[in-house]
Every structure is written in structure tokens, then in C-alpha cells.
Image (cartoon, rainbow, N blue to C red; front, side, top):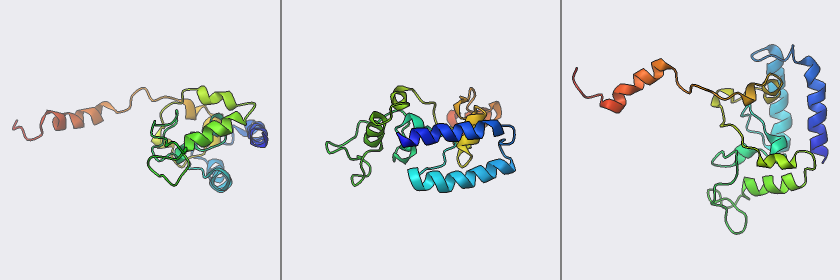
Amino acid sequence: MVLEWIYDLTYALLKPFKKFLKPNSFAEKAMISIEKVGKGVVFDCQMCGQCILHSTGMVCSMNCPKNLRNGPCGGVRLNGHCEVKPEQTCVWVKIYEGSLASPKYGSEIMWIQPPVDRTLQDSSSWVNLLHGIDQKMKTVWQTQDEKDALEPIFRGSNEKE
């Protein structure tokens, strides 16, 4: 598949520039602009910052109305259309078809993807890939201060102290 070849070529061309392509750098800002135009036009990229196009048949899984990254929801209609947007073919039907046509990365459709880290939204997925940021799982989803602030809500904030 041509898109797999382009993916591999892009990665090979960018890898030597890893030291310049740092998060929050001017170079990343340039990459974001390039990704928004290039991937936006070709893949309707949603700029999640954790691109898995090569693992999803070169179809952006974030175009699923439910943002599912690990397979369809179970609401796929008999005609292959989405339960949320009936006029739209289910993104995961497109992903499955794209994976069948992808000789190199097609089997990656079986990989379990980490949950979307919303803090990476609108960052460069190429920069995040080069630095391993896109695969880091948060071990703590909330700071202790955030948890402490929520506790009174769960315990009943109307209680008098």
C-alpha cells in the first residue's frame, strides 16, 4: 500500500531530526501546521496527538462519533453504517477494510491501543511518536489535590462542619 510506504518514509526522514523536533518547540509548531493540512486533507485527521493511522488501515479512528480506538461499539448497522450517524459508514468498517489492504501494518488492527490522552490534543503526533510520548500511559489520572477537592462533593458538600 502506498500510504504505508509514505508513513515509513516520513518516519525515516524525521527520525534524524528528533533532537530538533521537541515538544513545545518552534519545530513542533511547524509540524502541527504541516500535519493539520496534510493529514487533515488526506485522512480527516482530528489532531489527537496520538496518531494510530498505520494501525487502523490508514483511517483516523477519532472520526468515530464515540472516539473508539479499539474496535466498533456494537451498534454497527446491518448496512455497515454508524448507529450515531446513520448516513456515515462506520469508521471501524472502513478501518477493517483498510487493514485488509495494508500488507505491512494491517495486523496491527488487533493491538490494544492506550486510552486517548486529551492533553495531547492539537500537538504533533510525529513529535510525540519520536519521543515516545504517544504511548505513555498516565499512572495517576488525578493529582492528590484534585482528588481532595472532589471528596466533599462525593461525601455531600451540604454537610456542616
